[in-house]
Length: 230
Image: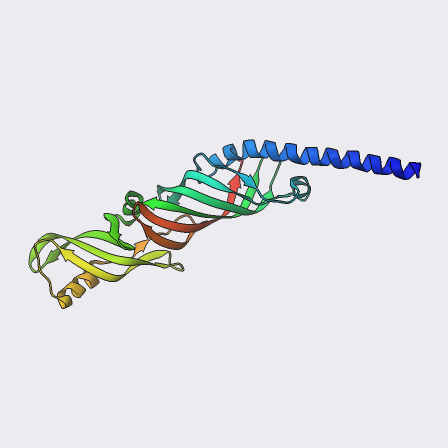
């Protein structure tokens, strides 16, 4: 009985040490992780970090890490040579593998944030803004009824073609300053000037859903194989 009592006492001490070590590691990672996320290719601004359940120590022993979620003031998305900010970001990182003592790879980072109208205009190379009631308003310059370089506004409900990473306008309506067009000519003008807005970003970044807000285009996105800590 005495031996059993001693064994139980030793196990209790070890358990307490492991629990203490777990809390210590979580606290350390919680303080250092925001700096690491800020240093990734996405350059997260003021990120917060919350670790998911499960043992961090056990995960590290298996060269992986628990899921991480949080928010960020903004992130920078690469679109060709441009980097466009996405603001008010919420994210969840999963499939995290430890590459070395100072590096890890996030298998998938799923996030939701708002791309400003100026950012979307930069990608589209056209003025894009809020069209009211879930619609985009895109401004074009076109020749209309013999008049040159007329300002044309086309509003429509955006539809995301996920496979081709582009936004198409549905239920389009056209407005031409100083020109009255019948329905047929309006449709002809829409068919002539309206083109999809391409959202093709870095190969690792994929837009999965969109919706319209007054301050910009709300996007759901995934980023794969994001290196942390290099």
